[in-house]
Amino acid sequence: MEKILFAASEATPFIKTGGLADVVGSLPKCFDKEKYDVRVIIPKYLCIPQTKLENISFLTNFYVKLSWRSQYAGIFVTEVDGVTVYLVDNEYYFAGPRPYGNIYEDIEKFAFFSKAVLTALPAIDFRPDIIHCHDWQTGVIPVLLKESFRSNSFYQGIKSVMTIHNLKFQGRWELQKIKDVLGLPDYYFTSDKLEFYGDGDFLKGGIVFADAITTVSKTYAEEIKTLEYGEGLHDLLKSRSSSLRGIVNGIDYEEFNPLSDPYIYKQFDARSFRKEKPKNKRALQEEFGLERDDKAFLIGIVSRLTDQKGLDLIDQVMDDLCGMHVQIIVLGTGEEWYENMFRHYEWKYHGKVSANIYYSEEVSHKIYAGADAFLMPSLFEPCGLSQLISFRYGTLPIVRETGGLKDTVEPYNEFESTGTGFSFRNYNAGEMLNIVRYAMGVFENNKREWNKMIDRAMAADFSWKKSAISYEEMYDWMINKK
Image (cartoon, rainbow, N blue to C red; front, top):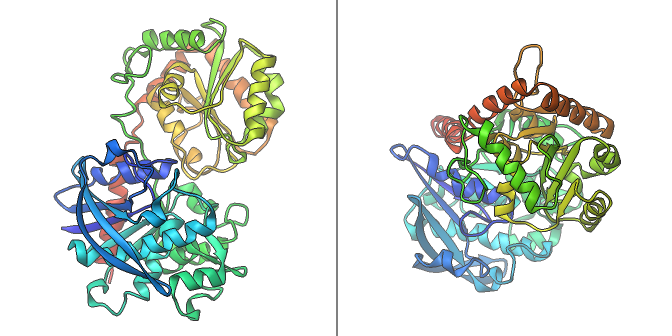
C-alpha cells in the first residue's frame, strides 16, 4: 500500500481561510483506500472551534530544534471521513485569533511546523512514500528532507510533491532571519536555491527541492512559466517543466448538491431546474431587495473583493451594465475600495444592485441557485471553485480565459450548440461588457439553447474523485521512478 502524507496550514472541517482548506479536507478521502493510505497533518490552532476538536486524542510529544533553541510539539490525532488527521500543538506559535498574521511571525511559525512534521513521523510510526506539501507554509519540507533529515535512514527514499495553490504568496522574508530560524548552512541560500533578490523564499525552496511540482490547473501551470504570471519565479519553473503538471481542483458534490441543499429556497436537479430554479431567483430577488422580475438577467458575484478578481473591470462598465435589463447581486469582503464601490452602486441603482459586504455560506448557496449567470472576470485565477459550483446549480459562468477558468468553462458556440458558459480573452472592460451582452441575448432570445447549456453544465464532472485519479497517476509515477 502506498503511503501519502498531506502537509498543509489549513484543512476543512477544522480551519479554513480559502480554497486550500477545501483541497486538503476533501481530496484525501477520495483516493482508492485499497491502494493508498492518505493521511493529513495540520497545525492545532487555538482558533479552531472547540466543537471541531471533540474527538481528538493526544498521541505523543517531542521537542523540535529551531535554530539555537528547542520548542515543544504535541501531536493529537483524529479521524474524519475515514482519513487520519494529525494536529501539531504548540501554543506559542499557534495562538491568536487567526491562522496567519504578520509575515515575520508566520515565517518562524511555519519553519517550526515543517520541522515538526518531519520529526513526528517516527514518533507516530508512519513512514510515507510521499509527503505532499501545499503552498509556501510547507515549502521548506522538501529542503529539510534533502538536508537536515537526510542522514537518518528512516527518511531516506521519502519523496515530496510541492503544490502551488497561488504563486503570489511565497513566504519571503529577510535572508538572515530565515537562515537563523532554519539552521541550514550557507550553501542553501544561493540564487539557485532559497535566495530571492536578497531575501529568503520558502516556496522557491520547495520548487527547487521537491521531486514533483503541481499546480491547480493546466493553463495556470503554463502561465506561471511566463514573466506576466510567474511572480519572479518563471525561469525556475521553466527549468523544472518536466516535473511540473497542472491538476484541476474539484468540489464536494455532496456539499454542493441542489437536490439536497438545505440553504436554498427550492431544491432541484437537472430534470426539474426549468420549473424550480426560477423560484429560487424570485425568492433571491425578494430577500435581497431586487425588483421582482423574471425577465431580468440576474448576475451573481461571490468573491473576495480584491484586485485579482477583476473588479476594476466591473467598475469601468457598471453604469453600462445597469443601463441594460440586468440585476447584480454581490457577496464578499476585501479591499475597502471595492467594498465601498459596490455599496455606492447599490445606492445609485437601488433595486438593480444588491451589495452584501460580508460572507455567509448560506447566502452564497442562495446566489449560486438563484442567479442566471455568475461573473468571474479575474486578472488571474489558479483554479477557481465558484465556476464549478455554478455549473452544479445551473448558473452559467461568464469568465475571463485565464488559469482554471479557461480549463473548466467551455465557451458557448451557437453554430455547434456546445459550451457550458461564456468567456472573453483580454483583460479589457469593453470585452467583458460585450460578452455579458451576448450572454444576455442568448438568455432573452434563445431560452432553448440557454437551457441546453444548463443541461451540459449540470452534467459536467468536476468532483474530487476525478482529481484524485490524476494525483494517483502522479504518485504511481513518482514511486515507480528510479
